[in-house]
Image (tube, rainbow, N blue to C red):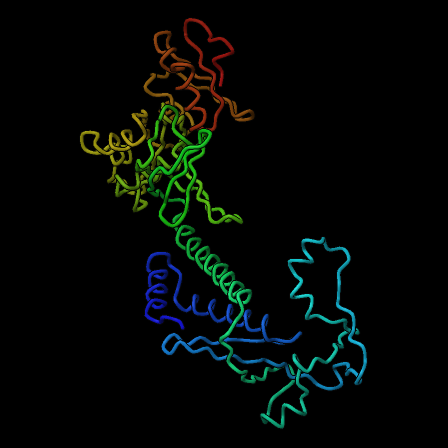
Length: 398
């Protein structure tokens, strides 16, 4: 006997905690009971449905028959041998086994003609005697005797169908929830670490922060809360996997959206981002409102906004410049804090030759060539730094 109070409580808990709708679970229970009934008492070709009443705990079983016209089916003479099952010889053994139950209900056809199965079909002339106005192709429902003494095998079959339906419903629910969050910042706690990859517990799904998507030098502890950019929601046979990144340029942009309302509203736009995670980034911004300073919007009063973002990124330095449609001005600003004397552009090769004074050369290039390298990424131009005293070696050309 089913304890309806317990069942109701379980269904409500699944709906609240795991986002699986109660009606979906009731549908799964009905499907499982129909599968169990057919396995124990059904005949080949039967379509059986079950309706489970959560209020009474009773289950109604019904057989579905498809209405067919006599001249569209092949009638089997009394004593005629059953036709062979349809079998695709090209299928693998595993595929055949997986579809064994389905294949057992399928019979050979002659073109569009099918063999008449009294368990699956009902002739139109007979159907009209029961229900007026019924047409070929429609379904007729016949009640079946309720059976409660299902065998252990049938009960196990029912359990497996419920589990499968639960997984499917939960997968759809999780996909719907996190699919909307793709491209946003999410928060979770460190679950475990394997081969440099960090697995993050998001509550209803597991996220992975790959080694290459981490900020170099950052260390994580089990249970520690982590914020990251959700750049991909992936569906796998094992479930839904969320791909996270803390080194992605978009992570920096999303952090500024949280700190700067002008970015969130779209008044100030990040036109370009060049980032070397954990070390330094360059950001080019533009304002659609002449009364709003785009650089000041990101910096904030006394540098509070940019300092908050830098803190989240482990002290990563952030250069904020104003974007310009004029490539010369854009290049000059991108190479800040170095002062530029002259810029020559080669439009064909999209190469810029930048002239600086001798004392500004190392500043323009930056430590390990980082400043000029980030400026090249930001602007999309190849940059060649030359000093007024002596030309820079070819290794300093980006």
